[in-house]
Length: 169
Image 1: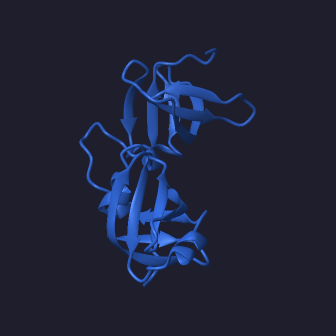
Image 2 (image 1 turned 90 degrees about the vertical axis):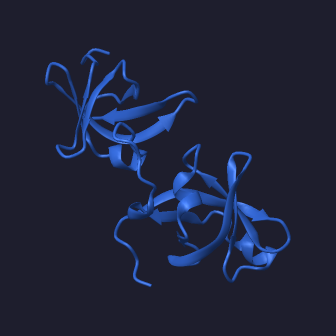
Image 3 (image 1 turned 30 degrees about the vertical axis):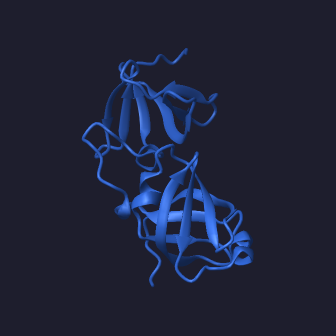
């Protein structure tokens, strides 16, 4: 199978699950929609390759899965640490005002005054909300809560996020 050009890492294998070759995956998202809906995952161990997902479900904060051709606990344990990726095109559709973190990373961030604050270099969560990690060369990193109070507009076509955030914050 040809490697998709829109792969997004959505988690990593944290270990084996059960005795019949199941794996435990630590997702980067709390709801793990992309992992649960995709029928094919891409693992980078021992080299980048696709695997067919027989079954995947949430178990605690992890996703436990059985994969086609993996029926041995030792083989499953050998995958520990492998990155798990899914094509972005396989992600479930979102509502108009919802965004996947992968779609926000790389967007420029401007405040309401038109001043550039930097670009989104990463996202993080503090539990109740997501946080934009915004960086610009020569400036300290800014952490901006991704909530309506601070985020006025996300324009994916213009690759820009407008925020109510001062340069001196």
